[in-house]
Length: 115
Length: 113
Image (cartoon, one colour):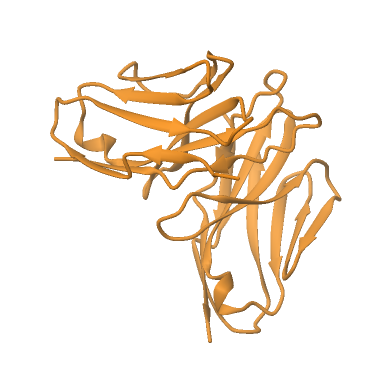
């Protein structure tokens, strides 16, 4: 069974540019979440999608946005990049189970460097 | 505001030297507490879910326990392959099926042969 696939794995941008990151969840998983990981703040929740609807959003500025497609694939976009946006962006997918096991399956991440 | 604090930040053990990692949390309405393992350059890998105080889960050399305010990850006779960053996360009751987790900053474990 293929895992969560994130593309691109590495990218370098300059301040003011925008970036789009892609995530393909595990087949059959309909929930996709995005997290930002930095050495100083650790893993921070960005947003979660289920059936093309954003269910939750973390405490990030409006420059961070995302969407989910009908095949559960997801993209996130960061506009007007700032130096502080340099981070590892992790996508995680999950089945919807009861009781909720909280088991998220993470991809290997997209490493964004903003110069 | 939900908070998760892990200690120590880093831990260096000799192979076979057992120890514990701590995760203290404050959250209104805990749905579950989770432990993940993260290797360098990889995404976190799920280890355990604990739902209520007194619950324990085991997997190989790892054992996770939960109280009302903290969780411990006990590592018995660790091996070098147990070296990784261990992350603790909490999920609160915020809507059916919501998968939003609040993570601690992790404990980086190094096991020396």
